[in-house]
Image (cartoon, rainbow, N blue to C red; front, side, top):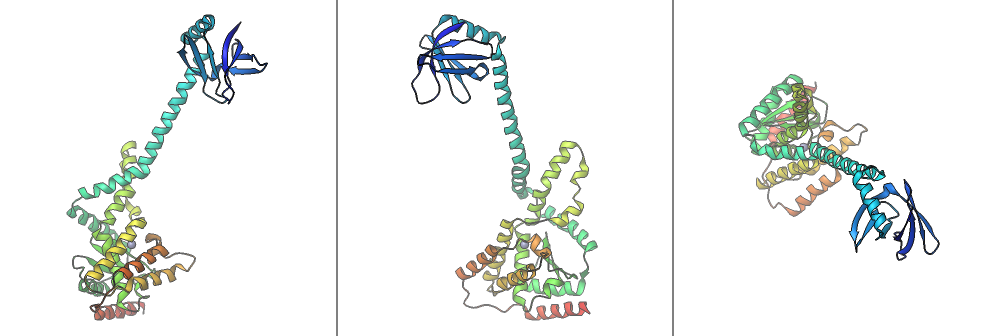
Length: 349
Ligand SMILES: [Zn+2]
């Protein structure tokens, strides 16, 4: 059975008159200028009434269009489409399945985004809801863990605390830990410095910069933010699977890491603090030099793995120094530093 139609092949040529030969799976179209086209029935996804006839379109390349006002064709096509007895049924199902899988894909993408980005962002926002008291309790809990794992020296810690308090960080507890690792870190209320890092310091300036940076992490609530960020996923997963054991943080707390943004914020905090208190800012640069020299080895020191150090960070600090010149500076707590160095030397023997 064949029908008179107007056919457009989707290309730049205008539509032409043609004859459509109806077959079950594929229509053969012979145009008035002697060309033959094939239109798979399954490719037809759109049809609409137009100018007293009907227009059909395919949704895949080549984008063919058929127009006809032949009442026999219209009747046959529309009844086949409605009854679903024809291949059109398959087309519609495939169409729906296509949309459905796209929808599922979008939902999956949103879930993945939420898990990896949205959730940490949300939990960071929620940091504001955590009270200072709870944060302090968290700090004490973490410190108990540190006490059992680190080799803390009470005499050295007292001298480091003296240094820190003279800088103005009165509410913070400072601890000296015996270790060759060039490292330092902060948890709520506490700063831990390794003897390995102190050994590299020849004067009090880099120590002041280091403490400024670490106290910055505390004041800006970075530990809390990181904990919320890193464990939000575990909490959600454990809720989803009804398994509370996933919430147990345990060893994971040792791997607590700060984002590059947090490191920059802590650097800025340190610099601003020293500047406001008219303390020399030069220590930040020598601190970076100490750390850079350490990272020259194949294995980066722990401080670097938890404190991603980059040339940009050092450059940013230098720029800050350039923008904030100091006319006069107060002396750093030199005697506390000397006493601390004496202690680290004694510990080595
Ligand atoms: Zn840091």
